[in-house]
Image 1 (spheres, rainbow, N blue to C red):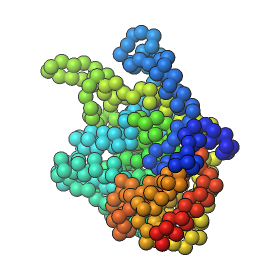
Image 2: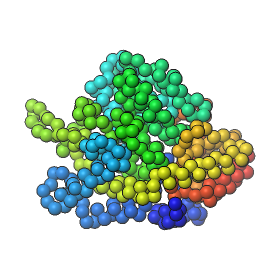
Image 3: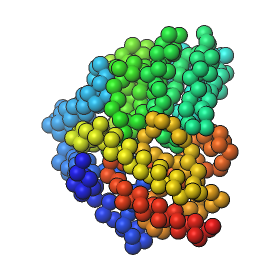
Image 4: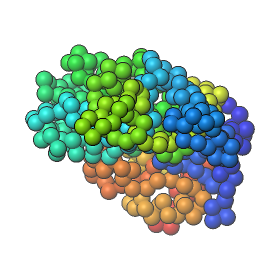
Length: 404
């Protein structure tokens, strides 16, 4: 990887914060966008903008064609069987809420059970809680140990004839644990239980093959993988998408509407009500192409090196507590500086130009597991360097001096 060439593609990395070069370690929240994505958005607004599907004029035809090319690009990227198994949504949160509502309306009833893990993002907790409240169902939790590893033996014990669906994160946004989702899915399928995988934190960091994984649903967000905001993907196996009802009503998702009855459009359009974020979908291609041009395996190796380097340097300080020591992790570290509040540390580091996330990271049950009210999260992307990690270490030393 030519890191200097890559960094040149991201104009925001040239910015200064409080007179210091920006060090961007908040990629777990959102990634920065390369020129290829920025230029795509600008070009489309200037030259091609028109609503898709419902027009017969040139611009609409052109936009529709590019939108459907985007669907095929996503299909190829995650190796789905069919393009119509790819639904464009507003993001991971929108995708999970859609499945929770639609699947829940048809398949979840009183006293049924839904299984999630203790390390989930709130977006993969709250929609299932809301479903349980509507249906008087139960939410059951897979625990993890202090290293950040799920208890697979306990997971198997949670499954029974009342279990309707399992929703699990592929990679934790706080612990960086890469969960054994393929094993979890095999166990679930032995009980004929479908599985939704939250890929928001895995797709930017490692190759994903939904057919090999054999998941029933897979969701991710464009802005986590160097793409536009407001665009996400819901992959669903054809058999499930044909069986569950639409989760939104409106234009384009219908076949025929009368005041007596409405019939729904075919896949994938029955799940894409209204004017979708077609520009976001079209320009998401540029982000996927960018990642593929570098190579996900190359990115994975580079980020693993960053993670190893940062972990060693933090450990060498002697006053850092790291949360999550799983052997398989994405490039993210959650930690605290002993006896110093995470918010105080984050404020000082910010003044040094270092952008990181402090707090609970929308994963309060993880913080409750460790008995803390929050921590500091450094999440690395393909454009980060060991030199930037050195700046972080110097910043932490300054924080320790100020508050220690």
